[in-house]
Amino acid sequence: MDFSLAGHSQIELQQLLKVTGLCGSGGEAKQRIAAGEVSVDATIELRKRRKIHAGQQVRWRDHLIQVLP
Image 1 (tube, helix red, strand yellow):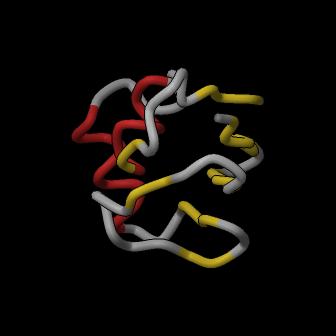
Image 2: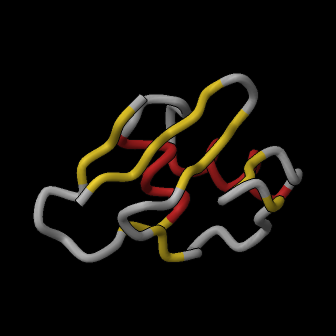
């Protein structure tokens, strides 16, 4: 799926999972990240507030998010 930053320079990883609907709440997103289930650019990411920028890819389970400007 594609996600547009809509003119913003970045979004926090936990917020991205929530606004794309992959996680039902910010709490669930934090749990998924802490459990090592989320990767950014093919590397497991454990930082909930990791800044995600245009051009990066976020993967959770079988969902791939391509972040666009």
